[in-house]
Length: 418
Image (cartoon, rainbow, N blue to C red; front, side, top):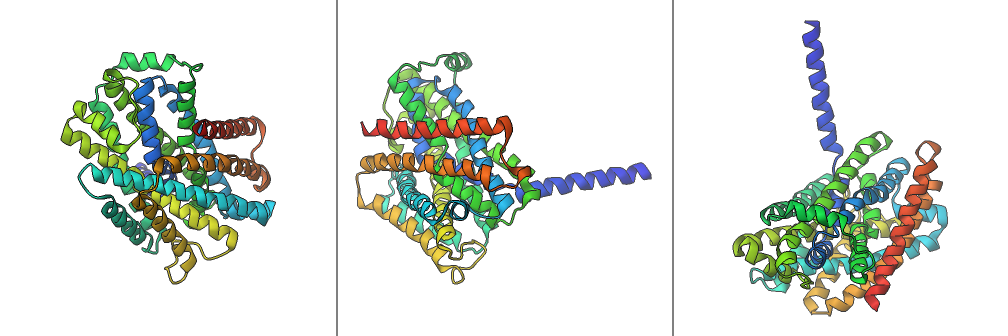
């Protein structure tokens, strides 16, 4: 009887632990799904088309890198209970806080243009006019935020983002050569300018400034505390693996098809990638699966980017900023969220030169990345109490990662200009 009671107790504890995991998991998955956005998809596809599997090792190396950065955001949010912009204001002053958030808003607007362009590109594959697909997306994402619950928005975002997993199926159907993949892991033509440019672009595609703002604010809005730190780290780690597996799947799918039969082919739009894959995957399968993945990537990123802007601006200006509030209780928060969506959608519908805009966005991201990552690192050293503060060898490693990532971002922006 005693053993049976103990077994039942252990089983109950296991069920409780599993249930608690599902209640805490979320912010890391959402932000990592958003990380593989439309621009990242195109970057990974271009990498596979031009260099085959020779950028595969970098995708694996970036898993711990993106985890290190986002774990700091999680730690700061859980321990202090404050968002990134709010902590900058408290520890470095309003001027630095406004500079950081102002550039964030511009970068978020540029990112939204990329996401809506991804949605529009997927719609055009099925003959849907750009204005219809973009308008419906703005309406849908506005309704999602009006639910008045952080958890409902998070669950919808995870559901949408999970469509990106179809890229794993696409990679499997592409029948990549294991021998070629292993060979690509050992071939690093780092002296080739074209290779280094795409390598840096992949680094920039993995770590986005708005990810830091969103992740830190999300754990605060969710009501998570230091007791959730271990699970939140697991959530972030799993998300880091998933986002890079998706990037790897896209690179492998393209490398196994276009990279073999049409090496060096330029792929800069959704339509080009889909058209290039369909001869190998079939017209119907290739189009539907790629469209699902692209729409999932674009929509979840649009949610995250808009919320990052609304939270960040609220943290500096002081207005009510929570998805737990109804629109009439936090009018400025919801207004910023919707205005960002409408402005990004309007730019795509207007027919603005998206190539020139993409260059401008890269430059802005390069300017913002050192600021955001620099403050993130300094706050981890200054704003956290001793038990949670960065220290020792890990502090040095994180500092090197932050500095290297910032330098790579600036290099990518300068290269795109010239």
